[in-house]
Amino acid sequence: MINDNILKNIHEINLSYLLLAQEIIKQDRKIASFRLGVCEETLDKISELSLSELIKLGATNQLICLLRLDDKKVINCLTRESRVDELQQVHTGIMLSTQLLKSYHARSVPLLKE
Image 1: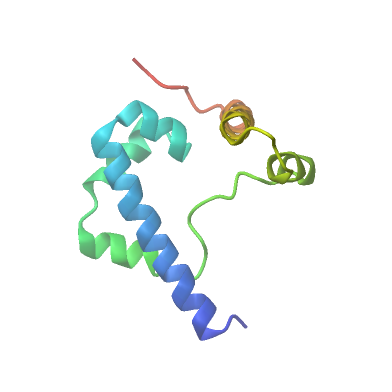
Image 2: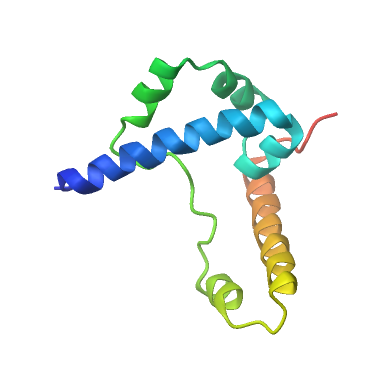
């Protein structure tokens, strides 16, 4: 059984994630689709949710955000020391983008529509 503190933290993370998702969608839908890893229809639905709906959705006992770092080798590569921090950030972005594109392909989700 999951303890109350963990459950409370999950609810807070979910709500924060949904609020962040709405903000990203408002700023740039194409970037939002890429960063969130969701299709246009999902972007539409998330952007339309009211605060009470966001709270209700966030109150689930499961995390609604997906951890994309699901490979031990990738985690090790991204966390090792780098002589150039900026280069490490670029490398991290490339690795995460590559994983995202693989997940798009696996789910047959259309990439950023024009």
